[in-house]
Length: 207
Image: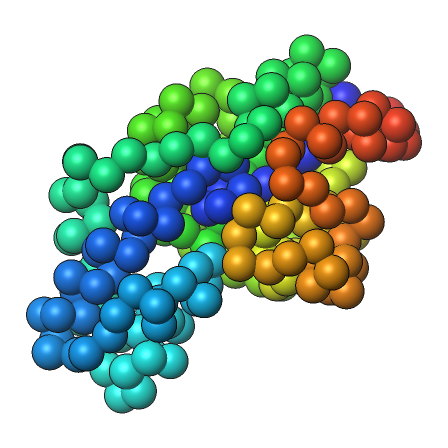
């Protein structure tokens, strides 16, 4: 038995357009002049932190209420599956493993994104509301974890805290060199590229 951990946004699914639309609509409610180009570099960072960084002093609790309202009521924006996600998740299960998601996205929103993308039945467990090293707190509870896969350099901190290798995905805002510099043992564009690495990875001892 083994487990592979995954970030969600820009790793398994692409909710960037849904995030951008909800975030910009919420900024409009506060009269803040924020455009897409300013938000894009922050994709993968909790939206409360994004709001504070772009509009210092903003009421982040009120902003997040507005953001979540817009996000939760967006039924028109598709949630595409990232390249190779279905194939990798299927391979994990066929070879006796499990797949878990540890995401900065709010728990309910993370579960909804998986449903909307058609991946809910391929993921065994979901943890939400965790970012960077805090993801490692959840990963530490997994005895058979062989890797954590993510698109953000902060995901390297999650893997380190969880005591497992970090595999970077270049479908987010970070390129291969940046992910490797952060500690990635492998950096891929298509998740199918992880299959050979995973098949060769040592399996945790069964006690």
